[in-house]
Length: 301
Ligand code: ADP
Image (cartoon, rainbow, N blue to C red; front, side, top):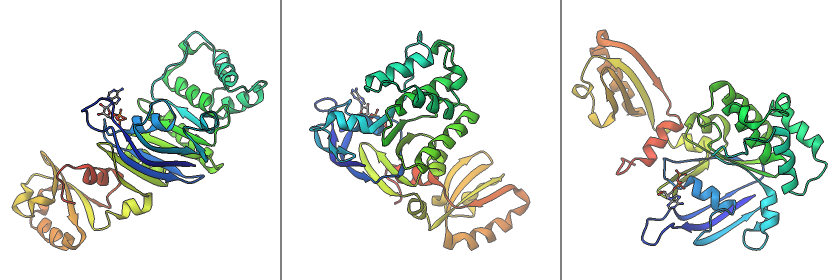
């Protein structure tokens, strides 16, 4: 559904590459997360895929359509939910959705508009002017707009940035349903738990390079050899364990990254200071820990 080959992009002569030889493919029905720190190249990648930013080199095809030869078909295949809420404040929700249908040449789209509005819990806002909507409602409107032409691929750029927890879960449910109905989804996010909860595939980008592209399960398995130990203890842990295992050391709260084969040793060390321990939690690493590990400069990989 999305095929990106050797994509590179530099905004200015002599600046560093915003995208550096990025290649990946998404199959129909996949739900992939595009993760990466600020400035990693996520928006650039989405903008190149959607034809908003011109690449320097490489190829993109969407639903089998080449970005250079079949622009109209390609644009029709994608729905994009942008990060910025830029909709005309003075129109009503219904007017915006009608206009958007018009852009795609879809007349008499009112049944589908009603259907999408219902599914996004926008139905009772159809006659409200956009200006009067809450931030969360505006976001639903952006998603509705992106879906009106029935795209096969949905690209969401940080859909839940600044959105409250209830709405976030509503949106999760909705995009999961869309994915369950066969839609291919690419989502950029800062919320790592979002990637963990929703996606089957993780693409990790850093400094314009794709540094990991794996099914989520495999991605999490990359961490198979260590555990995360969180503990509250009023004690200098470097006195009893190898300090390279200490990931964070904020007051009494410590986070340790411990190779599995060192766990018995750790437990006997902790036993020596057990009366100083207020809290202890041992877990498998999540996307977040892996993210830190993989993007860490000069890391221990
Ligand atoms: P992300 O979305 O992961 O935060 P971006 O794709 O926005 O990353 O940015 C990637 C790199 O390209 C950054 O170094 C950023 O400063 C640069 N960049 C992004 N947009 C522009 C632009 N319009 N002009 C010049 N540089 C840009």
